[in-house]
Image (cartoon, rainbow, N blue to C red; front, side, top):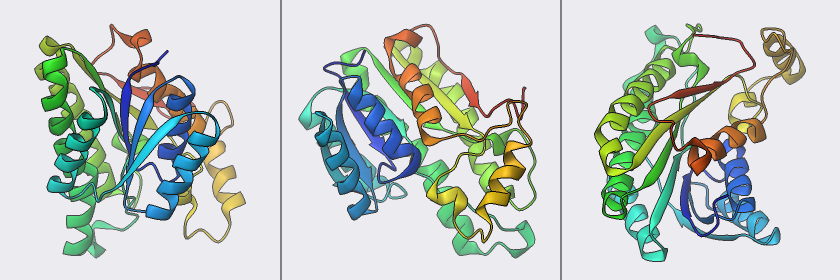
Length: 248
């Protein structure tokens, strides 16, 4: 499905990013993997290679525009850039009245700024090729008010509108821009700091008509679809992979 295409995946050291790397590599994509976690990044690359895939790594803080630009330049030096998946992000469970400037700056710099600058960097390289697919990771929190997630929800709501706007801007260049909005998905990030993970999982599963929570592989399957030519007529869409918790 993706044979011969080069894909950049940020946030590839674990969770949804790692699952996306494994799935896209299985479909033949060559990978450039990026994350701030060098150890986890290496583990993902080793898993991809063990399965017969091709991956190289760049340690990068995706909240830093200069590092994003360097990542895009590196990727283009490997092969023509065809796919860019913005998975890197940070959760922020904190009431607005308790949010300090440091948390505010970090969440917006990574979740929104990192996605914005990465889309721009990817597009600059894709435009001369006349094609490309950009997939952003949004969140169910952009559709549903959840106590303590105001900052995170704000950043992901902005990603949704960014996705739609860039679909308009880049469509004439043959570049599709879409987003996947996961519901509660079991990852290191979502389970961190919870003393009773079984209760957390049960509580979130009960909110779905299917009685399920998501896995990173569920989200990776949606990213694959939006990255591939199977979705050639799909752009500017927010694909909600949330077990039916919200149905806008």
